Image (cartoon, rainbow, N blue to C red; front, side):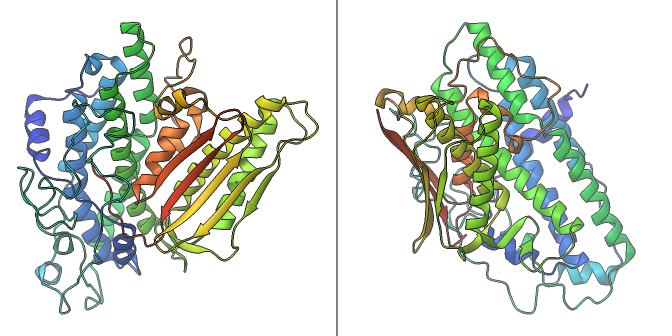
Length: 456
């Protein structure tokens, strides 16, 4: 069992005093195109700086949760995972390079790189979603400074080198990560070995954190039982949003780096980012998967039909796994609503309609069902975690799948997590319901891939 020493706590608090660096899909594609061992080395060094900062922020927050939530055994387990990963990264052995290679790495590029500008998500007017659950309140996880207010980084570009928040300044992202290595023809074997070793460490960290979503959910369940609470407090809800959004970002950076180091080059992929993601194909696959799950669950020969209206050649840069996850969760909800309204033995069901449209800034996916809708008073509750009748259930402590395997279908995580995935790269998820008829859900995706991560 890993324990956090007092000296490690000092390091955690030191790293947590630095701001995190947000990236956009556009920037990640630029970094990862045709990577050489030198580019991958710079990527490794960037992550060795960035990941400990992000992990330190989360460890510190996990230790200071309100309402004694930090005392729950499962929350402590997650805190120790984050601290152990932080410890492994800050003690990762540095690379020893020949003087000429070191000089090449440190030399400014002949053509200074200007990164494409990244922008905040227009849906998020406040640092963290103060309008998502009704009346804005203060407390952990709610910072009511507008995104374009004085509390932002001084240069406003999300590269983490402003000091408007009282945090320490950091070197701009271009100088820390991107490097033009084309002039170095031969990289020494130490570089390849370093990259391989670092990738292996990241794979181990990623595996350790696979069960984080379910373990935190179990911790919240322990807390609810200890207080005999029916619903979770608003500040806990906001903390979960912040924590899971941060987790999506950490896993994206790790997954991208592992993919760049291990996958064979592909014309349409840069790591896990597909530069020409086909929206029609991704949504169609999500439809088939959701219908299969529905038919299995209700023992039906044929589930409700789903009509897809989408241009077959609509492409944009995105992480296919994120989009697939969002569509699958929402379609599953629509199918369940329709089946439960009309009965699983009905001969005919009204079709669920999926319409995809490309606009100037966004690609929007609308999923419409006739599943009876949601009462207006219940709309704010659907975005809360664990809005289900799960009081008598436990989450399997040995469960090790990541949140992509949809284990939380019965634990009230589908909608709030899907909204975080949509918001992660500049999109959003909106729901409009007609009580007594059905529900329309709108998935907005940033077509320009220019939105930076909303880092809590």
